[in-house]
Amino acid sequence: MVGGVLIGLASVWLLVANGRIAGVSGILHGLFAGPSGSAPGARAGDRLWRAWFIAGLVVAGIAWHAFAGPAPIRQGFGLGWVALAGLLVGFGTRMSGGCTSGHGVCGLGRLSLRSLVAVAIFMAAGMAAAFVVRHPLGLPS
Amino acid sequence: MIAYASAFGAGLVFGVGLWISGMATPRKVLDFLDVTGAWDPSLALVMAGAVGVTLAGFPAALKRHPIEKRSDLNAPLIIGATIFGIGWGIGGYCPGPALTALSNLSAEAFVFVGAMVAGGLAHRLAFD
Image 1 (cartoon, rainbow over the protein chains, first blue to last red):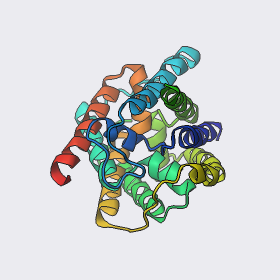
Image 2 (tube, one colour):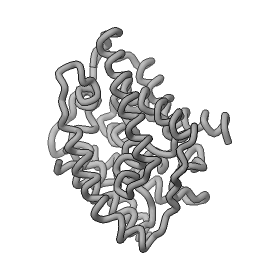
Image 3 (cartoon, helix red, strand yellow):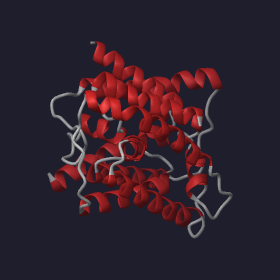
């Protein structure tokens, strides 16, 4: 709950101070693939603030490890599966214009029907995929 | 300059929130998504906390910075959300947690982030 409140505060902060939606997939794609047409607030030619936001995410992890100790790293989960997952997440979030933060935290916060539908679908798809990966396939996690 | 410091600060607070909540740990995310296993519903509270804050703060913020709100439910939204969800359920990472997990220098965080960028580029090549 506390973590969620911090995520919400950071999202409100980015909107108030920078006029941007804190959708992490949109921020990342804007840096590399260019903003997708369906990303809210997507404007071209503005890479640097995106890089700084992402730097903040990474530094948060470094600070967290310094404070709380190293996080356990998953063992025995094939990197091929990791690569497949990353490709699907990158492709799908650019296609649908958002991820857990853009559609989830921000879209639901502004009562967007598109985001509500996206969240329902990616939650259901995520639950189905997690079931298949863990039970029929029996991959370690 | 201030805008960049502000974006960095937002990313920092966002990232700390991800670590506190356990979102940056794929196992915890998969324990949440796998409702048939030893289900861990705690991430629903994280989402509730985050959305509670945006619900309260966004109306005033959006008055200051109006951002277009679309309402059409089209195929890219539905198909893209399905593809994203499948990837999330396989790996246990969504974009924010994957980026902040680069800090633990694990091979899987770097492979995931590289593949995620490649996936976005593949979408641009295919559809833009």
